[in-house]
Every structure is written in C-alpha cells, then in structure tokens.
Image 1 (spheres, rainbow, N blue to C red):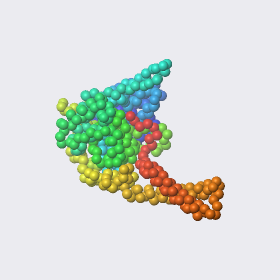
Image 2: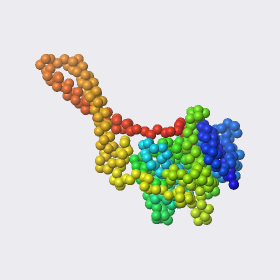
Image 3: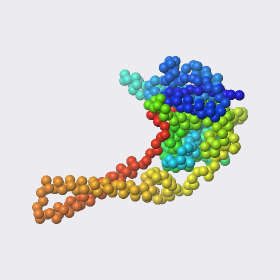
Image 4: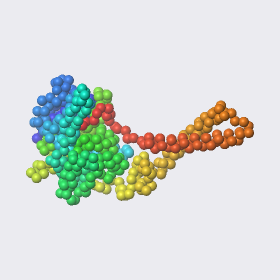
Amino acid sequence: MSKTITVIPGDGIGPEVTDATLSVLDAAGADLEYDMQQAGLIALQEQRNPLPKSTMESAEANRVMLKGPLTTPSGTGFRSINVEMRKAFDLYANVRPVRTLVPGGRYEDIDLVLIRENTEGLYVGVEHYIGMHGDPKAAAESVMIVTRFGAERICRYAFEYARANGRKKVTLAHKANILKYTQGLFLEVGEEVSKEYPEIEWEDRIIDATAMLLVLDPYRFDVLVMENMFGDILSDLMAGLIGGLGFAPAGNIGKDAAMFEAVHGSAPDIAGQGIANPTGLLRSACLLLDHVEQPSTWGEMPPRRSSPRLSCARSPDHAHDVRLPESRMKKDSSDRPERHPDEVACVRCLEMQDQMFLDRLLWCDRCCSVARNRAGWWGWVGGWIFGAALVAYIWIFVRPSSLVIGGWFGTVAMGIWLGAKACRELAYGVIRFHNVPAVESSTSEADTASE
C-alpha cells in the first residue's frame, strides 16, 4: 500500500531540488503519493500566511513530510517555519548524519552523526525587549529552557541510536562550566542515562573544544548529542567536513511524526538557473524511505553509502528507539584511518603527526619549512627596501664625509640585514595565520541555512 507524504518545495531553489528529488524517487519505484503544500515566502505571497492551515492539516494527516529549504527573515518578520513545525509535531530529535561521498577533499572517510535536541533551549523563542529611559528596545532578553524530560529523551535517543547502528561512542557537548543550571542539568541527565548503556563509551566535552577537535581530528568522534543551538551550529560545521550543506541530510523525528528536509539555504541568487545541487534533499529522501520502511527502493548499497534508518520503535518501553536491519546497520571501524593516541593532525596539511613534532600552532615541520621559504623571499625584498630608505635618509639628512664612508656602508648593510629579518618574520607570521586552504562548498549557501 502506497504511503502519502506531505511535500513542501520551499523557497528559492527549493522547487528545483524538490522536483529533481521526486523524479529520482519515481524512477526508483518509491511507493509514495505526494500531497503538495506551501510554506515560507511563497505561501506568504499567495496565501498571506507563511504556514497555511492547509499545510498543517496535510502534515497532521500524513505524519511524514519532505521539505525543501525555507527562507527565514533575520531580525524581523515571521518566525522560523522550521522551528514552528518541529514544535507543532514535537519532533524532538534532529538527526544529522555526515558521511564522505566524494573522495579527494580535505578529510576522507568521515562517518559521524550529530543528534540535536530540537524543541528546547534558546530556540523556544521566549524573548522580549526591556524598555529603559524612553527607549523601548534598550535591552533584549532571551530565555534558555532545558527540562529533565527533554534532556533525558534526547540523550536516550542518542544511546539507542548508537546501539541500533553498531556505534561505539557517544559524546555529549555542553557549556556546563559557564551555564551551570541549564547546561549543568543537560550534562547531569546525560551522565545518568549513560550508565544504562555500559557497552557504549561515553564522554562529555566543552562545546568550544568540541568544535576545535572536529576540525583537528574528527575521527575521534562517533555520535554527538547536544542541546538545540549548539547542535544547530556544530551540525553545519560537520557538514563542512564532507563538502558543505549541499551534501548533508537531516531527519526530524518525533514519537509518531517525522520531517525530512534540506538543511542548506534557499539560495535565491541562483534560483531558476538550473545549477542547484539536489544531493542534500535527495539524501534526506533516502532517510524518509527508511522511515516508511521502503529501503529496498534504493537498493542494497555498500555500508559506507547506506543511510541510517530513523524509524521509531513501537515498543512500550522504548517508544522512540531507532532500528536498522542488521545487514545494513553495522559500522565497520576498519573503514577509519588508524590513529595513534598521541597523534594529532597538522592544521595545514592535515597529515597525522606525533604531537611532540608539532609546534604550538599545530604545524608540522614540513609546513613550517614551506612557510619559512616563502617568507624568506619577502624578507629580502623588504630588507632592500628598508636599506634603500636608510641610504636616502643618511644621504639627505646626515651627509657623511669621506672619512666615515666605511661606517656608512656598515650601517646600511646592518640596516638591510635587520630589515630583511624583521620583514621575514612578519611575512612568516602572516603566512602562518592566513595560508590554511579552505574546503569549498559544492552548493551555494548564499541564503541562511535552515535552522
């Protein structure tokens, strides 16, 4: 029996990537019926409501949604449609797997999953202005809400996901060292839940240190769980490890409803040009097929390319468990590069090095030598320029006699040497701090990414 899903094409490039995704689903033989609805700017223009009643009624009836990117105004205008739909259907778990698709990038064999709490934190939208001295907007205040119930169910979801998908480690990222009540409660609950899963390694890390380590050595992580805003930020960072948001799928999972979406922006600057990349939404559609139990639609793919199933178990004890067929859920740890415990990646070439051979900025000897060679040329150029300026100054203002001509040449030579040394060190510093190559995204992200 075919499954009817609510499809929201979205704004900007949304209709294009949605059409491409639905074409692939049809060609693959997906047994789906599409209930097309509107939301976002297009709905505001045509129905004078960014989230029409008809869209909500369709989502309520079908309980499964596929959504393209939606534009959310910054600072003013209507609130995020993404956030509203997650709250309306209690889609508490945002699951963001990132896995290398295209080889040859800065990182190889990335295979991580971020699980983000979706309904609490700062994104609940409890905020207001405070008026003082005649200024109605003299200050603004937002409230971060963390409940034991919300923290427990997202941490339990993360551990159940790890168990079901054969993963070995869960990392809880937090800021409990500063936000001792809200983040402290989240950490406390995570520690309590972890004791029920002794077979899964558990650790907690400060959120900013987690961000740094994801860039330096992402292979030390497996499943990461965190509160709403932290998850929003780090999930985009993790997408950068595999080429950008255009390659990243997302599923929003609740007890009896789910929404799968593109997480990149609506990119209105390239809309209608036929160059938008539908990979992100297509991968999210693969998660949807798993959720509605049609994984055979896209065939038996290699384990490194398979999508994790996000379906909710219906058992009374674990109503939100995550299941995968055994043949497709095992994660082969041999796929990951071996890493010695004392090895750290050089931040420039990303080759693993023994930590004792890296300097304080985590550059290896080879990269330091390359930087010094480049800086040397600029140093001598700067030295000769400095020497010429010194000669001009002495000739114009000092006017040396023939008796001190030898001392004059010595002074100029010393000036050239000191100028070269100073310019070389300056150029070396500039190269060190600004000459780290960046990974280019494969999809335009000119617009704000989905929240």
